[in-house]
Image (cartoon, rainbow, N blue to C red; front, side, top):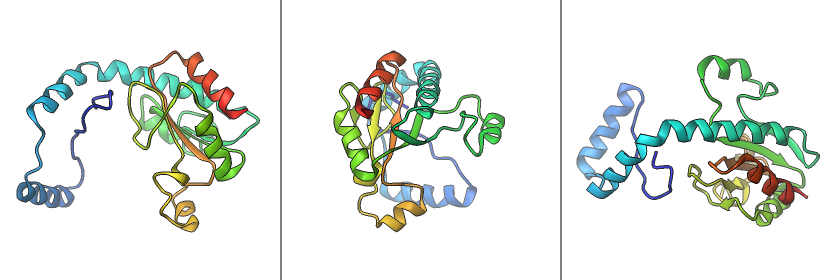
Length: 181
C-alpha cells in the first residue's frame, strides 16, 4: 500500500472463521504499527489510485510486448486475450494488475541470466514499489521447494515476475529487451 518499499501494512479480509482466528492471534500477540509507519501509510494511500492506474497500464504494455518476443515461451497476465481466464478477469476486474509473469527460454539458467542482465529494473523478492522490480521465484522465493512442488504451484524453471513500476514504459521495455538478448 505504501508503494515505496518503506513500510509493511495492510488489511485482513476473508471468511468470518478465518478472521476470528487472526483476531485471536493478534489480540494475544499484540502486533501493532508504529505511529510513524501509520502516518507514512496514510500519506501513501492518497496516491494509491493513480499509482495503480499506471502500474496496470505499464504491466499490460509490457505483457503485450513480451507475448511476441522470441526468447519468451509464455506470458501470464489476466488482461491478455491469450490468458485462459481472460473473460473472467475482464468481468471481475477493472484493471489487470501490476505484475506480469513470463517464462524465459533457457530454464533456471535463462531466468538467472535474465535477472543478472537487468540494468534499471531492481531484483527483489518483494514486489510492489514505484520502481519496477523483477524476481525469479525458482532461484529465490521458492528455491527451497522441490522441483515437483514448484511445478505444482506454477513455478516453472524460467518463470520471471516483474512488478511494473511507474517509470516510462519505453525505459522498462528497453531494459527487458537488452536482458533477454
